[in-house]
Amino acid sequence: MKKTLVLSAAAMMLMGASSFAKESTLIDFSLLDADIHVKMSDHDEDTEPNENKRTVMDYSIAAGATYTQDQRSLMKTSLYMAEWEVELNQSARNVNSVSLSQVVAAPVRESAPVPFAGQKVMGVRVVFPTGASNANAKIVPPFSIPAYAVLATADDNGDRQEPTDEEKASGRTLFEADSEETPAYGVVKNVGTIKSIAVTTLGMNFPHGLYVMLGDTDGNHRRYFMGYLQFDGWKTLTWNNPEYVSEVRTREVRVYPIYPRGLPFVKFEGFQITRDAVHAGNDFIGYFKDVKIIYDKAELTTERDIADEDLWGIVTRKEKARQNSEMTKFGNKQVTRYLERSKQATEEAFTSSLVSGEGGNGGSSGEDDAK
Image 1: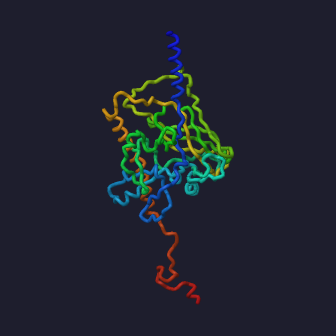
Image 2: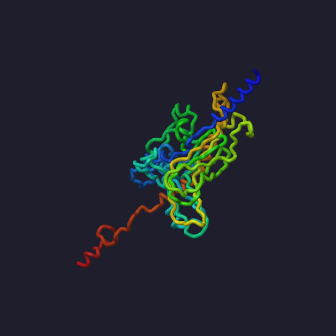
């Protein structure tokens, strides 16, 4: 009888360990298309969508007191794909490569034999140097994705509303998934050990390497080699953790206090494309659909007998301070860009001095003089 109980307990432990492993979509770029128009400057008269409503962020918190309320209302950005940046390493940077390297929202043909046909994915162009030198480029979001941004709906102008009771009760943050089955917007919480990472990408026979960059709760920044892009068509590239131990009995088990540590998380920090010196430089073109992870849960999320956070409020205070820190960091860079955008020339051509009523001394044009 005693032996039977021991075997049953061991079986339950193994079954539980396997059931804790979970697959989540860390980020799905098809969700990051523009769906609202946010004015970027005082002279912005466009109406075309230019930001993503779900991920729009107000960075005026980092602006000084000299800005008016109207100016602060323009200080917004989002994870819309065209807002992402290409950061070339120092030896690969020149005027041509910096100006031409960019990220766009790329529409997939309706006739494409993939489930996301008709949607938009991330399209990347990187201009590498033609000389024989190693080079790399990082494709990064316009701001470090905040892990603690408050979940709240934005209106069509990009202004965040007060969180509803339902949003507060969900316990989720802005860039988490809406439910267990839906994709996240760059942040997945309750992550223990990562078992595998997958990237859905369209290869075009470039011999370059692809890395996924992730950050975590403790401020660690890691990159994971997914493989080479020398293939044609859609493919899922996978990284499998070589140090992942499936057998529970041989794992190094660490026990952490349940409260007030909070839930460990990982967040998406971008891609890195590496080009070897032996390969041809110039243009690289790539397309990316999503990034997924399989991981062990860090904690079992069950309802406890005492509402610890309601009683002590430790995690709330910590997360609030962390959120303010994250907002300030990404806001400083965005405020600088707002200033540059405001100072940018809007004229497309010179005012003619040869046409009456368009400046100059009002003289006749050369054509009239010829007559």
